[in-house]
Length: 387
Image (cartoon, rainbow, N blue to C red; front, side, top):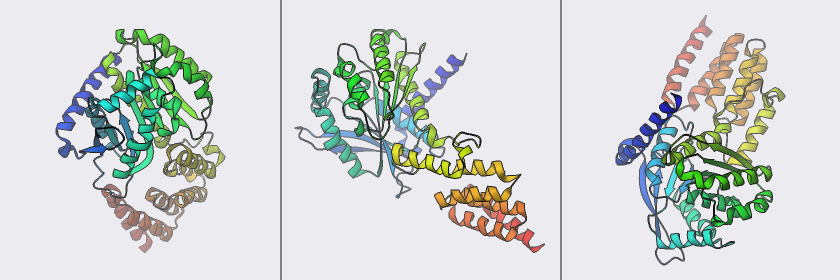
């Protein structure tokens, strides 16, 4: 029953994704063409989907996801729009880039990567031409995802193994690995074990469908190599979607990979978690690591700090306030932290201080819901101060 419900949801999602593209302006995201010049005779024209907020938030920078398959554009753009429109959750708003269909030069680079061990001209193209062109044209934040299915998934592993710094995360669904494909199996043990630097994320998946049967031995071999070569530079997940259809794999893999990748961005630390039990500075240090080492952009500690503060609120409001103020120091624009301080001061009977921090929360936020909420709370505190 659960599997049937999942399948129906996937059918809806794929249909919605395709319909979304035909109504791009209505949905709010924009589709553009990026022409990339290089040493190839014919420039390559990549399709780019800008998130719905791109034109409305000129100071915001965005994650980039690249996929080699031109037919993946509708699926990825629609999924991203749906999974990010509710406040970047669970998918941070992302610029989707897909390759042109049938470009001879790109096809030749892919063939060389697959057939010639050690050939990295495709990776040179990524590093010297494609990725700089994306960064030059669009407001990117430096975090990049490489997404692929079957042969393109095999090339995703080839990229991770040979030049991991090109992308921060690699989603590889049903990778082709047999018959020395891109020499991934041969090169992986030594090169993965030697990986160093900032952590890279890998999500690798497959299923037991008829089309994937001939790849399952190589998949298991690759899984064993990853486990045996694991180090701090590689954060990986391996998933089997047995019992599902072959062409459903990119949908399942992308959705699960996005949730796993951004889980530590979205998940609020429990007050009794190992990190939170060490105090507010440990929480700040944890999010600094995520910001500087994994993502390269600010990951807010606010909600986890407020969660810890809330745990102290009943027994010791002053201790809660101290934690909330750490959240304000970490992010002076965290209006929910000012609101939490105001609530705590009101609980202590310090109404003037409650008014001060509630006014600061109201001044900072531009969200209509919170503007209305904080306006009402501020009026309530001001009435209390007259009593």
